[in-house]
Length: 80
Image 1 (tube, rainbow, N blue to C red):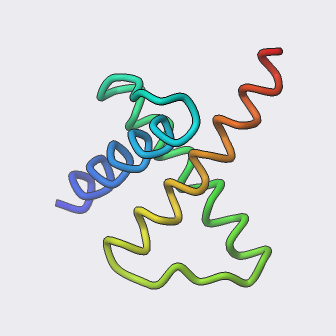
Image 2 (cartoon, one colour; image 1 turned 45 degrees about the vertical axis):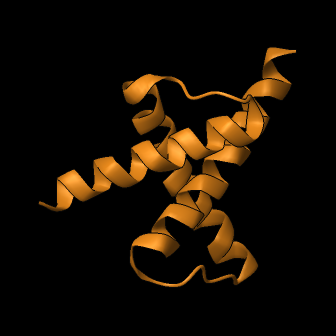
């Protein structure tokens, strides 16, 4: 059941990151991948900055979405 929650949070975070940075999502698989990687980046960055997005589902989505935005921003810089 935890894997299902992990995938759902990844999909939501990737979709939110896509909306914020590009105006559209990347399909369900792309959103999941971006959200999962974004969750790792967001957790690392929030830890470095001493920020806590809170626990639970909403905190996980916020952390992963912030990481997805950073990931997409870096990808945009490398693409240019």
